[in-house]
Length: 413
Image 1 (cartoon, rainbow, N blue to C red):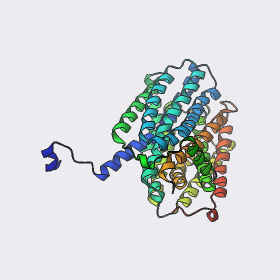
Image 2: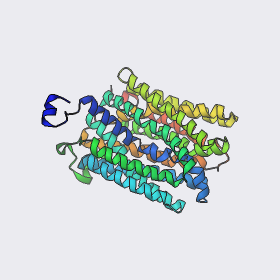
Image 3: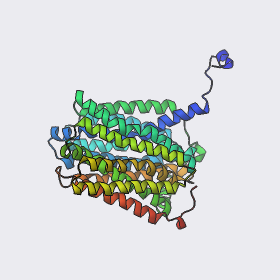
Image 4: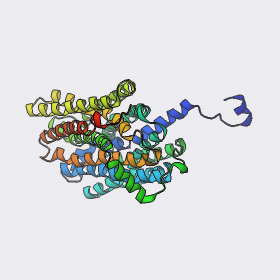
C-alpha cells in the first residue's frame, strides 16, 4: 500500500496486470461452463441410465438437451447483451443456472432430466456468449486470438478436472450429487462476475434498434461467406468433439472395459491436449497467419477422426483408439481460438454479442444434433461413433476450405 493510500484509508487502484489476470480468470471460468456442465456428468451416464431404467440413446439425449440449450440461450443472451450491456444478462443467466442445476439433482425421470438440462444449458449459455463478447469489446484480430488462447489455459482445465471430479464424486454420492456441485459452481461464478467484471459496453456503444436491428445483424452475418465459413469450422469440429464426448463413456467403459476413474483419466489426458495446443496457438499467433493455424487444427482433427475409424474397423483396441481420440481433442486447441478470432475480427462492439451468439449456435446446435449418432446402433459397437467423428472432421476441413478461400477473404492478420 502506498503512503497516500494509507493516509486516506483507501486501497490503491489495481494495476493493469492485476486487472488482466482477474479478467482472464473470470472469463476463462465463464467460457468453461459448457465443459463443466457436460464433462463432470460423463462418468455418471452409465449409472444414471441404470437408475432411471432408460437406454443409452435416452441418456445421451440429456447431453443433447444441454447442448441445444447452450445454443438457444446464446442466441438470446448475445443480442440482449448488445442492447442492455454485458453485466445484466450475465448475472441473470448465472443465477438461473444455479437454480436449474439444483432441480436437475431432483429429477425423478429421464424425461424430466432432459427438460431441465435444456433449461440449465440455456441459462449457462449467457456466460459463454457474453465472455466472448467482452473479449471482442477489448481486443481484435491477433490480440483477440492470443487472449482466446490464454483463456483456453483456464477453461481447458475444466474438461481435464471435471470428469475426474465427477468420477471421484461418484465414489461418495449418487449421480444427482454431481448437479448439486454444479449448482455451487454456478453460485461461485455469479459472485465472481458480480465482483470481478466491470461493464465493457457503455450505453453509447449499445445496439438501440430492438428486434429489427438484431434481425438485420443476423441476416448480415449469415450473408457473410467468410463469417459462415469460420462458424462452420467451429461448429463441425466441435460436433466431432462432442460426438466423442457423448459416446466415449459407453464405448470406453462398456466396450473397452475402463472403470469410471480410468475413463476420467483418459478423458483428462485428451483434454490436456486441448490446453497444450491452445497455448501453442497463442505463441504462434502473430508469427503464423491465423488461417494457417486454423487449417492446421482442422487437419489434426481430421487425422484423428480417420485414424479412429481405421482403428475401430481393424479391431486395434485401446492402443489404436486412444491416440486417435487424443488428436480429435487436441486439434480443438488450434481450431477454437483462431476460428473465433477470425469470425469476430473487425466486428463493431454493438454487434459483438450477436456475432458471438451465432458462433455459439453453430457450435452447440451441430454438436447437439451429432451426439445421438454415437449410440444409434446400441452400446455394443464403437463403429457409429467412429464413423460420425470421421465424417464430421473431414466435413469441417472441406467446408471451411471452400468457404474461406484466400481469394475471397480479406486478410485477418
